[in-house]
Length: 166
Image (cartoon, rainbow, N blue to C red; front, side, top):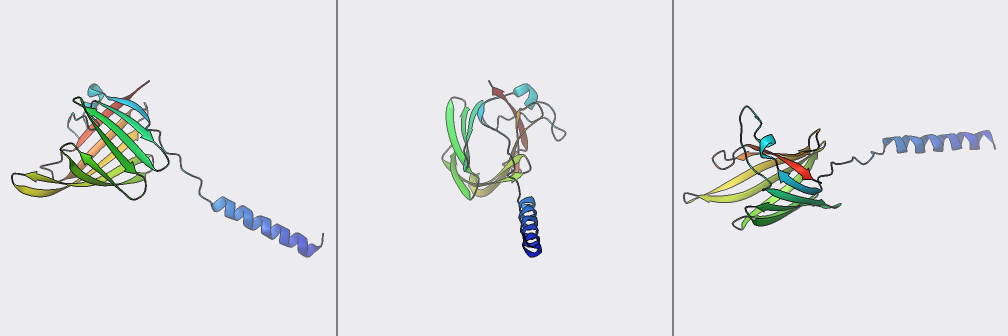
């Protein structure tokens, strides 16, 4: 092999290794799939200086996930609500009372953020409701969901803890 060929081979190999080093490895996301039950005792622990007990995902929730979306089958008081949250673009779901809800998801590290908008008719006034729900797994592998939003008169900041049913 000539000196020029050897130099070109080293150059090409160096470029390939540099490119491979710069390729981002896919980030693993937490596995929320499974059947979850509301843990009232853990949810009653103080959060943000206060206690708010709210079963944000109902009494029980079955979570499934594929490459494109997270699906929640929520059971609350014997009723079931199904919500699908796409990982790209908008999602449209109906909350109880057939209220249309538009959402977008994003990841903040290992936390899934669902930002939603809907409307409410309170005392004859139509109000835009904006919520931010953050889901993650704590160190004990419990599913945590925290909700904040506006207006404050319609959205109580809440935190729920769910335990996976084996």
